[in-house]
Image 1 (cartoon, rainbow, N blue to C red):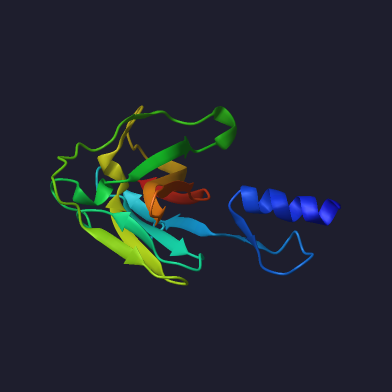
Image 2: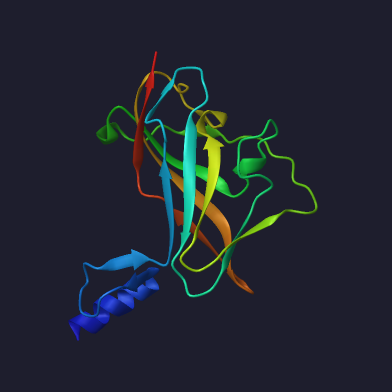
Length: 170
């Protein structure tokens, strides 16, 4: 009975059982992984972040975005949000995101198909989001949220990444 409840709860929470009877072997149906490829950035410079959308469903999903790489008009930021930012110590609470990059919505938005077992990478510049106190030197722990992933004819979902770290140096 308890095993059935664990698997049912996992399915409702958007987790897929990988091995029967093993509550430890769960993976997200759709996952977002984010990381700073260099692990660090300089103060006042771009903060490159790679956002990977991983499809573990048995059908394609779709991400709408004008661009998959940074542009001067922030086309890559459609459907992507910096969810949480911690500077130096997580026990002091998160740093509020003051504003996101401005984005001019257009009529036709390209849709990027992510087939089962595949992933899509979107490259963003985190410095385009304004945070309270600015992106000053320190160690940052951040999560990214991808919204509006189309998973069916009439279904969309939002997925938040696990926390990842990078450093901003002087």
